[in-house]
Amino acid sequence: MRAPSLVAVALLVHAVAGAGSHRVEVGRFTAPAEPQALPAGWEPLIFRKVPRPTRYTVVQDEVGWVLEARSEAAASALYHPLELELRAYPRLTWRWKIGNVLVKADARTKQGDDYPARVYVAFRYDPAQATAWERTKYGTYRLFYGTYPPHAALNYIWDTRLPVGATLDNAYTDRAKMIVVRSGGAEMGRWLTETRHVLDDYRRLFGGDPPPVAGVAVMTDTDDTGERAVAWYDALAFLPAE
Image (tube, rainbow, N blue to C red; front, side, top):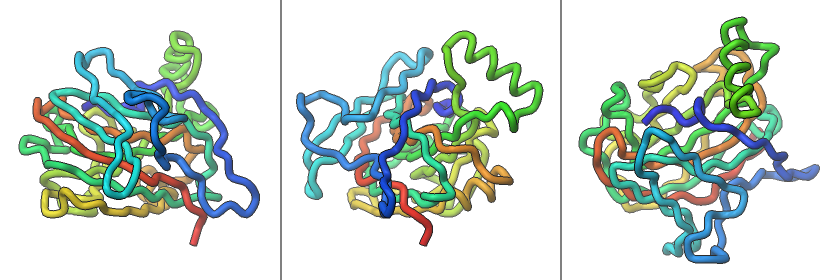
């Protein structure tokens, strides 16, 4: 699936993190007001060229209320707009679980660019750091949509083939970097907690310091492979440096 970070319009909001706060909560899910209601603060990212979106609902699991994603030859993301300075909160933690892996998925190709689960961090476009060509491209986008799209993204993926720790450009754009956090099906059906130093990952893969965070998204997509996937997400938060 084409990297959503480069087609999404991010509505920026400030994270609530008071002095002395130890974490910035992004995804701590609670019982929904209505059965199909999206969690507060999250909004769908729908792709016009993909006829069927992934279905996201808050459900009760053995660990409590969590976000469930079900995808059948489908793709869309759930996005949480956020404005955050990574130097203050450089680490991202979350837990996830998958119900299956995708047999035909291959992160190296457009035809295989599907994942049972991924968490991605989008970064705000900064005209002051852009090339002349980028300023023209992003300026045109702003004329049509009223705001700039995110400039870059880090995708933390659960892959099928590549080993844990592998990194590569997204099959559609080098402005989205893919980082394999889990691979294969040996741990499917189990809740696993991850913590990534996003600031270090950005510096290593893009070079230099990042602009502020524009938002966080979760995504389960199967439109390129035509397969089915189910995954669950919970407890997303940014943490201060250790």
